[in-house]
Length: 456
Image 1 (cartoon, rainbow, N blue to C red):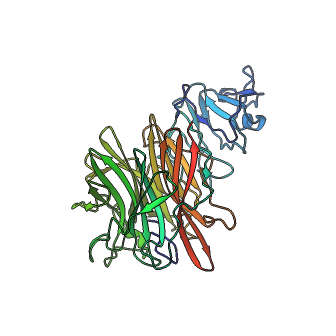
Image 2: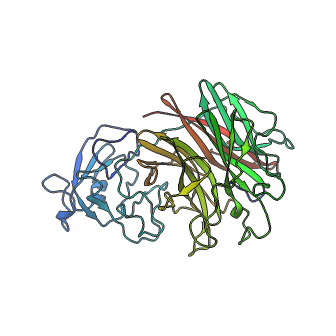
Image 3: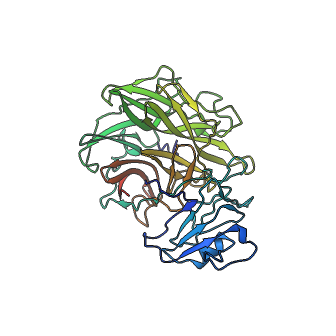
């Protein structure tokens, strides 16, 4: 569902329950332990066991990198920020009895900002524009990613080629072979899905033509097919994708993304695909209401104990501002065709810019890990950065305050934006492929890059 104004772009479970444990700097041994107990309010306290701080923020202010803050059970009515410090914050009693409640604030949920705010960690349903993740056990520290020095590993091809632009990769590793499906098109043309193979994830050999084609004229996906995700289950490959058509009247507010829905195809070899006769298998919500009534797109699917689990982007309009807004929902299926949306949708949202999109989910037992892209309607592209969230059930997520991957600097191939990550764990190394955008006097440049991160 990625777009541009001028184009068609295509674990660690912790033994003790943590309330909010995060490390902003390199991990270091705790130097000082501060204590916080709401029962001592209104006295400020000094942070010792005998005289704990009344407020969590007071402990953060007093702390230094490497320190630990232990919070006693209770409700803490405050808006906290780590002010860039590398400290660990944990509850002595667990998530069920230790609550941070910032109440109504002007701009809650500003993860990925310099100052991270957590609101209403005991409940999301009563908070407008809040961060979901009702009570949680632990933060996983996000990886430190290193971009490949020879990026992009899959560059654009000459203007006019069917695969001039490449984006939204998905990578599956089978044995020693990396297999990639990606969105591709010629500038200004309709998007289709291409395919490539690699022995190292860096040097790729491309299939000479698209492997998933547009629907015939008049079908729901006759305009674009893109953002693939692939699962091999019981010797059969399943592919889900975003599809869009432009029949009269499908777009109530004139936005082309409104028609995006999710399709399904199967294959014996991952190259020759048969589309599902029941397509689209995930449709938009009821018109003019709900969180995904304008689009249901950009799926990420895994199989867990025989159950297909999908996370996808839903689009709506914010009533107060009238702005396009993206969030992430979840659905489950027993066969890959019939899906049931979660009644807690959206399961992940972030009130920065125009929300978040392009989820990529990895199940690293017992944790679900999810990478997403921050979307900015002002630029017309989901320009990043790429963020990170974790969950124990795939429903209640906690967003890390640290950016996972940032766009490039001046003159870099990905300086205008990054989006559409796909991540796999290969031995002890996390590997990410992602889309990068650069715009110069010659036009738009869209290619695929590669980054690695060490496992925890």
